[in-house]
Image (cartoon, rainbow, N blue to C red; front, top):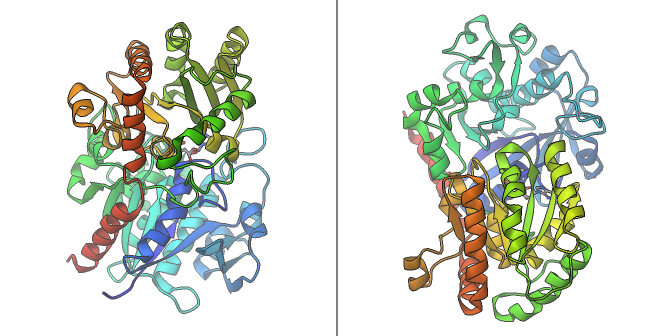
Length: 486
Ligand code: ADP
């Protein structure tokens, strides 16, 4: 099997820089693909944390087209950083900033995001055409709107170009930028129009990728069908239906090393399927840290999530009386909309010992919740794949999820047949309403009361294959198929 070279381009990659699931995927997929004979190099922006993690980098000049497009000085650095073969676009004027990749410390989007991510995508396209330090990829794989212009730039370079793949991790983020930036981001006049990159009076960088990539993937089979409908298509369903022949859904896996309860140093105690009794100390540790009563027998629900409308956590606030009445506990870690943050903080004040909430982003506490909770709630209104339910499966926390997107593809609902066959791994509810969520919480409480059944569900979840092995094989097949396609 010949080695195939792929340039992956994204705005985040774990463990260098992460705001969400995108980083987990971009960071973990390359090593899984290596087993399939695919060599991936990953291009990300040179944020301060990324540069700080590099030592021994080799330096190449910016591609001339990128210098011309940005009018800025910079370079491309190549280094292996924490196992990831990384290319870093170092343009200090664009990326050397405190704050997160998209917004400043005040939470406002950086006003020049269009220029920043156009520079990233343009660099990917130029490396695709001319290579970097003697290496030229056969395929450029763009992730989400931040990289969406890469397939468009390559499309306009003509027939002799690398093949392109666009992966949608979340269709809700269209990457809208003003129409009058067309020239500044180096798109030709014919790129405008609804058959091009125009989207409701603006340019959508995501649409650019969807329009021009040779293949489109998204992160679960169910989401791949949902985005073809007006309800799930976020205004792009027409385009996606037209391109349905090149669209497919490939589930995400998880980083099996970073998320392994038997070796996870972020936990109070390590455990595995054969030593589940040890898990109780993680539960007690979590209860202590979240200000909950130390009650081994209370059903402890966990949440690790962005606190946004998408994630449906406003519905959890509505369903809270059911959880409280069942004598259960809730541990929430998240950040996002002020209203939802305030709602959980108020719920904590009103239910001391039963509800705990920490607003913020804490990697270690995220692990502690997976290891210490009995069940993990994911009531998303839509969910392209979702990673937290996959971590929950591996950590023996029973996922209670909305039946949407990747959540419906990864959790086997504890219906009577599944329970009878001993294959249930969690609970699903539909439609996605506060009432049905409350009913699912009650159903979880009933199941938890039957400890042997609960333990069986935990064991089934922990035995589920949530690794990248299967997904990597599918990406490899997609790449190889693309190379032989006419
Ligand atoms: P999304 O990418 O839509 O936010 P995913 O479930 O795909 O949702 O991925 C979320 C990732 O971010 C997971 O790795 C999860 O553990 C992590 N995460 C979310 N919120 C927090 C938080 N407040 N603290 C730590 N990790 C978080």
